[in-house]
Image (cartoon, rainbow, N blue to C red):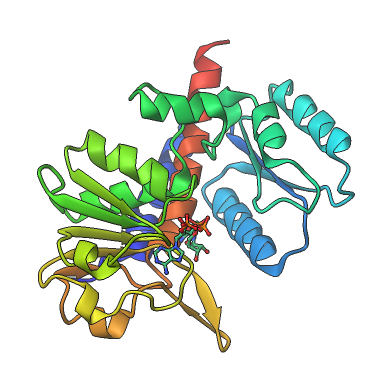
Length: 277
Ligand code: NDP
């Protein structure tokens, strides 16, 4: 079975659009871009397009000076602007900018990427807060296809703050038994072969081949790698789909779910901020 992130996203975005139409205002997402890195520019444009399509206000701020004090001032202004509900600073940041200081500056109530330490701690403690978009989107995709998580062995390859580590918490909350692998893991294959659910987020094209996957497993490929002008994942899709029971493609898998989850976080931010005024 193909876990179709594109189709699932379209359905969820149609629902979001209906919700937005019923509001007496529009959620406003502001994305700050600090580099002209082509991948970042593409992601930011995709986010803007999706936001506008469902009736959000969307603003992209190009802050390319590399001046951290200026960037922090911009974030501060957005924090205090009641017309702004979600603030996202696209990563990676331009060289010389300190990611921790920048994330710390965003109002946690508008931190729709879920990278502020308050939101990270909320996830750790299973409290309400913003969950990073990619992990949120992955769980929503698994739920859409009724993939059971409770009691299952989930193996996550990759331990980034953005994907791997938040997945540990989300899958543990859903009662999976979780193993985390990374570049120092000895005998990666021994771990992946015992996975019921295998989540791969390494940025290593086709790291996971069919012999790494237990027959009947569910495989989630987060990787986006441009190789010879083509987008491919961290999983060898063609070979692994013959072994796995369910698998996400690249593209049309986790990528669109990430964008949809970001929009859902922004709607949540809007509703929470509105309920406080
Ligand atoms: P990072 O580079 O931050 O982390 C990569 C992780 O993979 C690290 O923990 C690293 O281990 C581990 N790793 C690298 N090589 C190996 C290996 N050979 N064996 C086992 N583990 C390995 O990446 P991100 O988590 O930010 O992104 C991962 C991929 O997902 C990228 O391709 C990125 O483009 C994509 N991505 C896609 C998104 C989407 O919406 N679809 C969203 C976010 C990311 P160590 O910690 O030891 O270095």
